[in-house]
Image 1 (tube, helix red, strand yellow):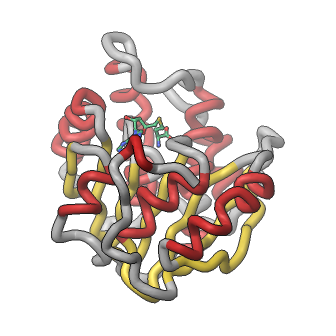
Image 2: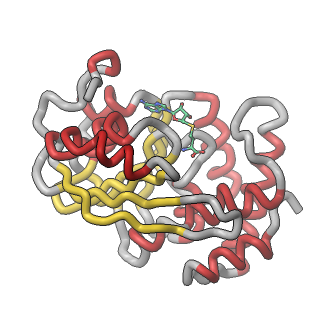
Length: 233
Ligand code: SAH
């Protein structure tokens, strides 16, 4: 057993999220694939059974508190080894999910895993700011989500251009969330967003977790996102 399934279920239950046996076995396969591939490449620093259960899986499924229930089009920016996107897909197979990262090796792990389980997602290799600037997917998503990629101001420039008006960008943050919000006010407004709410998530490890929900209220001006060296709020 590569992850602590009981601990995951306990946390999911406290979040009000029911997990089926089929979903649990997909999580088990995901944990096993992660630990196996992590031996030959750097996918994640968290590889212990409790850490995978809480800091990866339960943390990611907490997003269902915001996105749950509706069939949605969602993009995970800087997904790395698949977080938070893959746990969301396991929980909601009807999601139309795009996983984006600038590191090809991590995406090949993801592609192999999804294939092996018969799960479907679109994979995009590139920097978010480059893809959002040119790509036809600009302003086509109901949700953009992201964890552990950049500070909130920079991350807003990566993510908000993908979200359609009326959709939301949800940033997964920790202790410094309030500070980050203060530093991102101008960026969020300029990019067409508005902070709607911050949701506290409590898991058994006691760490501070906040989901910052930013609603897209107007279209992002065409000059954003800028190239990486020009992003400076
Ligand atoms: N979201 C995952 C991975 C976090 S590590 C998790 O929470 O575990 C940060 C990831 O973001 C790395 O895989 C890195 O390649 C990617 N990344 C950083 N900046 C990026 C950008 N501008 N566009 C796309 N991917 C980016």
